[in-house]
Image 1 (tube, rainbow, N blue to C red):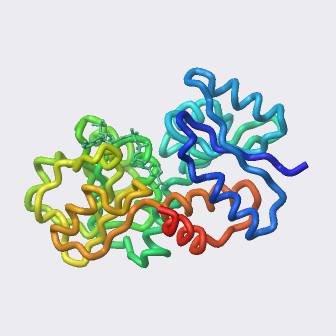
Image 2: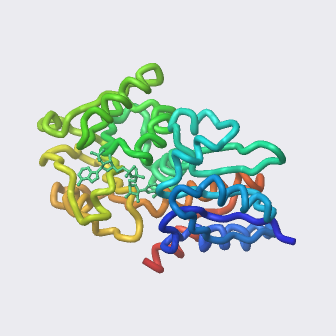
Length: 272
Ligand code: NDP
């Protein structure tokens, strides 16, 4: 019987993961099946146990279970520890390995697909939720000159500054203090775009030749990307590349084979 994998979340119906992993397994000839699992709130650990009893080998974890996935993992990768959130579970014989591939997916999309060099750049990350936390460590590995974090609830950005203070130049900044500051890369890791909202960014926040990156996928015309265009930005991206790259990292973790991502990104863009 084929090895069994799934994405688990609530809601999960919208997930593109089965499509992406289906393409990866076709492309690499891996004998596996990949499904969607809707876990009732409060029943995440039970559903994972049942999945394992049915021969499940690995899970992608989506909203709202990334923190619970961290808690039920018996050991973590360093990047999952840094994020304190898990988006990939490897179900081993007795143990559960928790990893977080979101950050690796983002930096691969930015550096390899969009050919944007992070080293020495001024980076502004807006948002301090699960997605933001997962990308800080991988971004710092590229040694930006500064990684500023702005969040609506300011304390969360200050917590991140403290948590990552020994790893690089992470600075919490209030939205109001962004006036007069310019960045080479602005990453929208808020969920504002999901509600058609724009975080309170001031005019002039984008430096010349800057990249505006919205983690949201499925809509390349978000209020954030529209705002960037009005500010004269010409390099943009939504989060489709990140989505496919984080999936490729999970696939590699499970199967030891790195799939091609460019064709899958292209396919998802043409379906959007
Ligand atoms: P969370 O709910 O954990 O965090 C949401 C963040 O957005 C918080 O920092 C919140 O601020 C902020 N926020 C929400 N609304 C607004 C607003 N109107 N103005 C300013 N800030 C706002 O969500 P996630 O971190 O899990 O997800 C964030 C985004 O990233 C989503 O769009 C998600 O789809 C996307 N994502 C994309 C991935 C990809 O592969 N492309 C992977 C993971 C996530 P506060 O703390 O004040 O509430």
